Length: 256
Image (cartoon, rainbow, N blue to C red; front, side, top):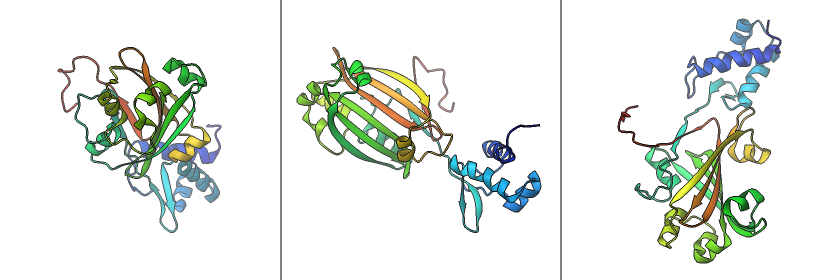
């Protein structure tokens, strides 16, 4: 017999059923509380506590008089190999292009600051810790749902050569293309990927439910002779998937 509290057992069963498609992925209704009481031989409070867990995880929502329904969990897939690649056509920056090409709607807000580079950023940019850098911070949405935050640090020497980096608001063509037009081309990058539970601020910005991790993607971009930026993108772990294309993929069907 399971040692878990009964309400957690209820949540576990319903979570598995949501995952295997027992209830429609977008708006499918769960059985009523009365039906669930009978099914699990449990009290109303036990059922409600189990359902509350799933609400907190962002799997279901409740509305007065309508019961519980499965929330939309449409995953956005990002091709990290093509992201910021200047050989691929873009309409605006890489984020807006990818979201629009997927038939979805992009929206983002910006914050620009001059501040000392954190130690881990300074190490990647090969500058002294505490050296002034420009932070361009984006809060990004897909179809009005929080998708990611992106924090990009640029060293001060680069900002002196490319002053639009320090201006508030969007750089319409994207910073990678802007820098290339200034003669500072990103010719390579080094990616680091990690996962962890969100900080309170990340959970607030991305509207993450209990138990949902974040995916951290740190990309350090290089010109021919030195690093030119360090970007950390923080994704909602439940609504995002990344892929890379490496090598000759001629044998991979377009329908794969």
